[in-house]
Length: 355
Image (cartoon, rainbow, N blue to C red; front, side, top):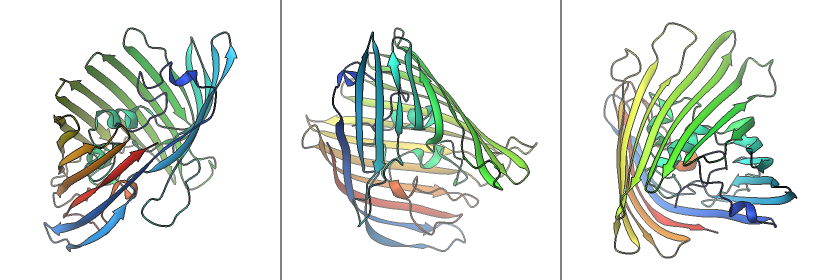
């Protein structure tokens, strides 16, 4: 099961069948795993003690619907928020993909809090159920030397256009206005996103460009990302490949770009089981040595039904001395206390149910 994405995310996800709804649909995911994680001491960094926990792995609750306005025009909306399945906590309200818009023969236009092209492409290629957990490969491409670049965050105050599908080809363009208070000392100004996708039979390929303009004091710093990815379903499973180049500071002459590549696969075992595995490597940042890392995982998923999956996975990040990569974030299993030179690793097993 792939991670749910908004209509603008990837060509084909906004299907005609989805738009045939006339009532509000309640949907979501409850995902809970028991984890045993920590971080070894690979350099002078202090070892992070192994610890047990239960993780929610991006559980969420949402509401969506469509109104037929006639002449092929429809109004669409979605309200989606994160759920805490591992401890007492409130529903996140509208902190995930939340939007309202119009769709028709011209395509789709939506406005709200959106998943843009780069984030959507990464999730499309990932083989972990829901693109979440410690195996999620955004641990590398969503960061630079371990620091979040902002490229894979959802885009707030955004508007997007999604083209119709033309013989397997589709495109999207999105702009996010960022922070509403423009006079603050530190703010996210604009986010620009462009996505091109092609899907035909067992083959999918996509390109995403994302630019995040971060204004801190009087310094205009930008993060720019170029991302290419694809998947191929060969019947007995699927293989995926992704390359990402992100530059975190284009406001001066400093070379702060880094490259990431990753490979993954899903191999069916019988009618209900699948082995998943992946490996990724982040290169050095610019000309700074020892700022790269690797991320590897292997796991097994067993489908009890179309909606319920049992899963077990082992994953590890190996940081060079100047890098502090971690599992993606708190919602997907990061290890607390990790600094440059630590190597996060862990095992998790649990259940994921979609409704």
